[in-house]
Amino acid sequence: MMIMAIQMFEDIGRLSMAAKHYKDIADIYEKEEDYPKAMEYYDKAADLYSGENVDSTSNQCKLKVAQYAAQLEQYDKAIAIYEAIAKHSMNNNLLKYSVKGYLLNAGLCQLCGNDDIKVENAIQYYQELDPTFSGTRECKFLQDLAAATAEVDVDKFTDVVKEFDSMSRLVSLIH
Image 1 (cartoon, rainbow, N blue to C red):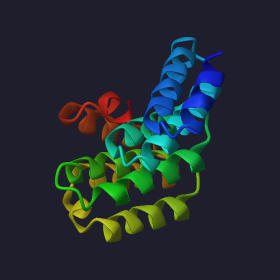
Image 2: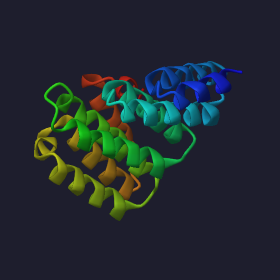
Image 3: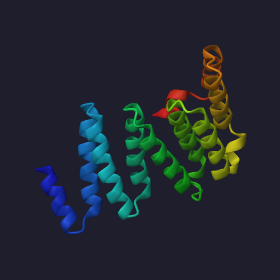
Image 4: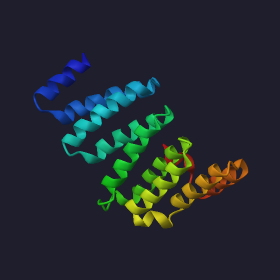
């Protein structure tokens, strides 16, 4: 029934209203912990919000898709979303301070892929994408994690996570 209403809103050009209802459906699936369905509807909402130039809400929906994609081990999808939002946010004075968090999340997803070369290339790309990223704790954290992973050094990895977490709560960056 709700899908029919959304279709009607789309047909008459009320895309923001349709997007709101897609987001409401996604929220319901999220509460039910049906993350693939939640992703599907957050993605639909994001597309419609983006088409209406409601970028902040579109990005919120896209970030939900990225979060659940990462949790479902769809790392490439999560990486693409985090990188796209980072690129989009760089030229916006209000959003540019969030870029390092998006790049960190993309980098963490890269680490999950267990490809040391790909991780190093990604970190280098992030530094080129945002020259200010090089001097951040987030960049150093990714570099140190990459080194610990490449060395297969569990103690070093744990120490790096503890050190970063003592200064910036890691959980809050991921969610």
